[in-house]
Structures are given as C-alpha cells and as structure tokens.
Length: 208
Image (cartoon, rainbow, N blue to C red; front, side, top):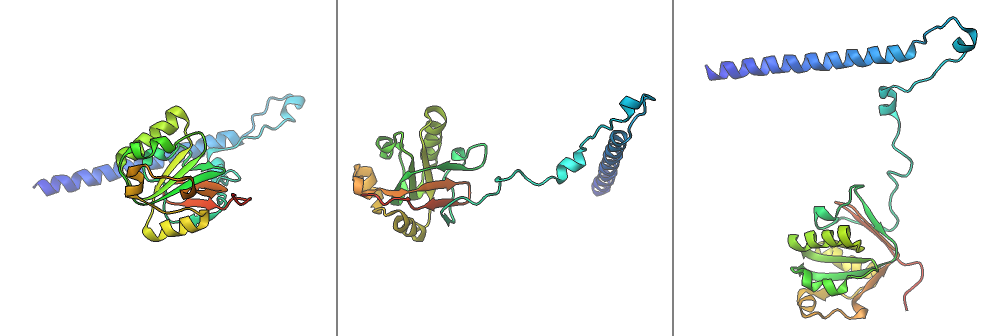
C-alpha cells in the first residue's frame, strides 16, 4: 500500500507544479499586456508621448554582452585551475606577462612555493597540487592580492607547456630541496585560466 501512497503523492505534486507554471505564465502575459497598453489621458501633449518598456521576456532573449565569450589569447591547454577556491567569481582569471614553473611531480606543501611568490605573476603547472596548497594559494590571492595560479596537468601537457614558455621541467625533489634556479622559469606573454582550460601565449619580446 505504501507504493500507492507514493504514486498518489507524485501525481498531486506534478499537478501542483503544472498549476504553478501555468499561473506564472499567465501572470507574465498579463504584466506584458499591461505594459504594452498605453493609457489615454485626453491631453494631446501627454497622449502624443508613447512610453516604451522592455519586458522580461525580451530581456531573456537579448544576446550576452559583447566580449563575454571572447576566446583568450594564446594556446589552449586541456587543464584548468587545480582547486575551485582559485576560481574567481567571474569564472576566469587572467594575467599579463607571467613566470611559469613546470613541475613533474606533486606540489605537496605551501613551503615549496612560498619563497617563489612575489608581485610578479606566477603560474605553477604540476602533475598534482595538494588540496591544502590550493586553498592556501587561494587565500594569498584573496587577502594579499598575490598573482599566483596553480594547475594540474598530464605529463604530455607538462612537456608542451615547457616547450611553449621555454621552461626547464623540475622534479618534485627539486622543489622540496628548494632548487629553483632562474633558468627554470619559463615566460608567457599572458595566461588565462578557468576551471577546465588554460590559455598561454608566448611573450611578444624574447627574454634574454
């Protein structure tokens, strides 16, 4: 008998939902009709001016703002930001000239990166980035305004990124030992990243 009660509840719930949708659609049509009807005031100077309104339906049909779907500059890679906390409210983060550090291994501790972060944008592309590191990096971005990004990529993508930016691929042991020479950094003209993709462009002028 329990299943009969469940079926009845589903039928009643579906009927209520359909009724709510119907009432909402009727109310919207009435509102749009009221906006489209111009009230006459029997005053020529007033009645000659016909006000114009934009309905919600017309707003919904408008295209997105120009530039909101523009493709970022540079080569697109099939990996995005390593932690959701690094994703800003606008859904995408972008920097101009950026240092790029490529690590064939996992970034396991913030201590491995803290001395590398300054006011110059930094992109860290590693095999993996620990959740704690991602959260701490995001806190540095929000509270201190540090321009740092971290992405997790496959070994093949690590190699391609290194080739594009001219970086020396470091190992996880290098990072743990603090071995990050200036020659290890690659350089990008710009970097843009969201949750799924990263765009990296080459610098306009070659680095010495």
